[in-house]
Amino acid sequence: MLFDTHAHMDDASFDADRHQLIAELPQADIALLMNPGCDLPTSQNAVALANQYDFIYAAVGSHPDAADLVNEDLIETYRNLCKNNPKVKAIGEIGLDYHYEDVPREIQQQAFRMQMQLARELDLPVIIHEREAHEDGMAIVNEFPDVKGVFHCYSGSAEMAKVLISKGYYIGFTGVLTFKNARKAVEVASSIPLERIVLETDCPYMSPEPFRGKRNDPSKLYRMAERLAEIRGLTVEEIHQITTENGKRLYRI
Ligand code: NI
Image (tube, rainbow, N blue to C red; front, side):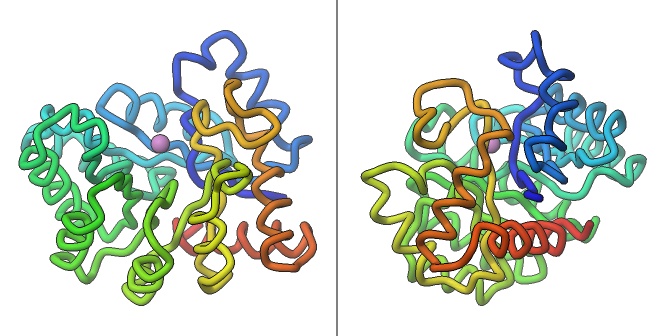
């Protein structure tokens, strides 16, 4: 059984078949699923899904693309969503994205800090999205030594992954691991401690091979497990067991 540690089941691309897909997940070997939010509406939808299904958990937070909407009122709304829902297990996804830079960097940094503070206050792990912002991301992580979590869809170096792991973070791998040109991700996945690796689809994005370019969904997570088993020289069953335990430890489930 697998844990999809990052799946946007609330996404509009699942509107037509969301509940059917979710109902079929146990047969697809998906035992647990974390649905992070990207802004207030998606966070609320994530919480609603988690309240509806035993094996779905939620995170609330604003993605760097929505960082311009983060203010004290929104933080208070997130705080209440966390306090009133035992199925909310993390703050996320939060972070920095300098690739698209839809929101100015300083505003992204401010929103990231405010949400790291909330995680510290509520003693919840964080789900961090960090793209082409390694230095600034690490600097903000260093400001919050008590906060732990996961760097999802990890795109940094093996060296940086090892530093993050020493600070208590987990490293999340998506379908990128299965791409032919995934040299960097494979290098990281082969060299860091197995007990800090979690698997995720990041659906509806990042479909693994041979589904690349199509809509992704949690039933395709088995491909990441197969690839990781190959990379680490372990059986698929061992990878299922280890990464599921890792996800449960990460989100305290
Ligand atoms: Ni995501």
